[in-house]
Image (tube, rainbow, N blue to C red):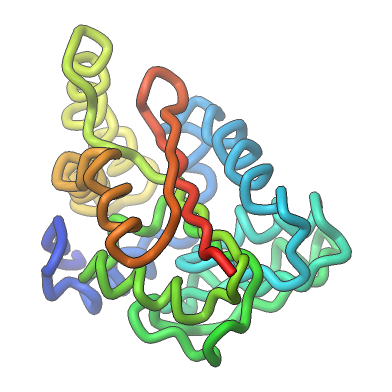
Length: 240
């Protein structure tokens, strides 16, 4: 049984997150479909539209996992070079199998989101889908996004914000805290991983707070909520 990582910002959780995702890698894609009822595909499409709106030639998907979003990006922009980066080799291995099966040419490379192995200004677009809340230091992650992004480039973060006040938010909170861990534990065999998931969402900054962090980094930032606030897309542009 892997150790459940700490949640929130400024936490020493990198090795625990790495071990946790390695343990659930074989069932990760199935669980995403089951636990989101397939709605996550629409969220990824919306985020991909934002990421590709400026016709980037070079795209980096950070915390790419099993490469779902990197494959989405390459499918929608076949002329672009797409690289997926993650620090869990087991997840990347599954992503490479998926890319090969679909005959999609993307590069999947090991890398730490807080110390990306790329020169300054290497990419026109940077994306992160449902991985940002696992970062040990949000400001440092955003600083790395800014560093490797070329002037005029765009960063897009797709993430789960904490449930909003009200009936729907309360229902979502019950689902996340009580139903999701049981289903995730049954399918993956790792209940602690799916206890970490709702805890990490509840500890994540509110959308406006994340926007403030992005602005403090230098990004011109906007965001929008999806599916009654269950997910959110933050867009940060690095002005020329």
